[in-house]
Length: 166
Image (cartoon, rainbow, N blue to C red; front, side):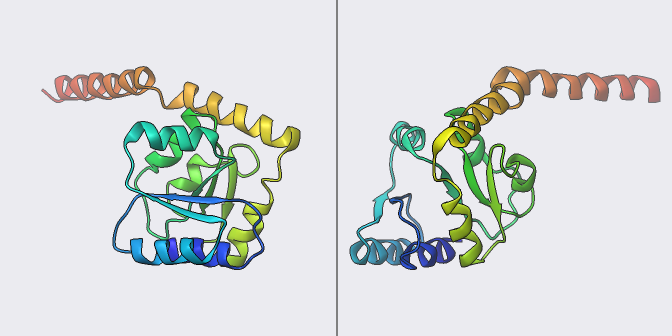
């Protein structure tokens, strides 16, 4: 989804700064875009704490993946910091991002849909409510303590099923 993301920012229709964190096979395209577009910044690979600091300051996280993800951990990490997501409407991410509540979804690979979604993050009361919703969702569903309990419940059910079968 990096090509879709960069195309959206190169359209000149999104007024927000884009900070791209990480590296990989498309780092050259990201750096090239950043050198040509004053709104795009390539931060390269960063330590986890620096990533979290940037996420916490961000108006929203863009998760443009065009691949089916098993969970979308990056989105959950953003939610832990109260940062809503603009995510491709694909696979499990569809379940994480509730449109208008914890962010917005857009058609994967669709530059115009990504632009329209980004422009919905104009700010105001709705944005602050969305930030609170993200944090609340994280605390209610994705903390280590809650996941530990869920995992232990699965193990206990498996043990009970095994006992019943002999």
